[in-house]
Image 1 (cartoon, one colour):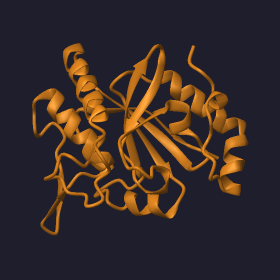
Image 2 (cartoon, helix red, strand yellow):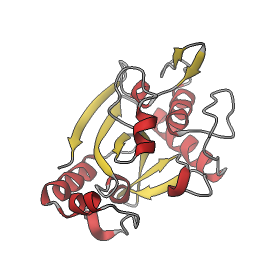
Image 3 (cartoon, helix red, strand yellow):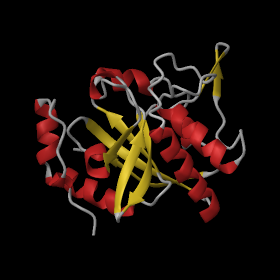
Length: 204
């Protein structure tokens, strides 16, 4: 059985609205039920409650629901989320590994989603290996949002490159193009034929 929502430290910079979301039994239940659904290789999505998150969600070409994403790896029976994030949440800007209940916390988020790909065991093993290698290399957040560089990765770019490398198909997840600029939005990760939503939750 995985740990409950409050078994790990919660974010410290929590607004009054965030405090209300944390204490709502509905939200606690939704976090715990979502955590129990997680498998290695799942893509987790969340909607941040701050202005920066709103700006990131606007990078999505079609579905602007989600502002951030990560990949799940089950370690000793508990799901952890690997993700790339910058700003005050991660001053050193290197790839992060957070417990699932910290990552899903209603403190600074309005909701979440879980997406699963139909990957065989060999591909899943490759995806985990690539993810852990990126993490070991301490790749930093890409403030320039430039797909041409690999030493720095923004959140959707991290998952896009890890997935495409794991399946050995550069078009498994396709990027978007707008105004001559090629980019990957969070919605590119779930608006494709490979992805299936396991659940979508909006906190109260």
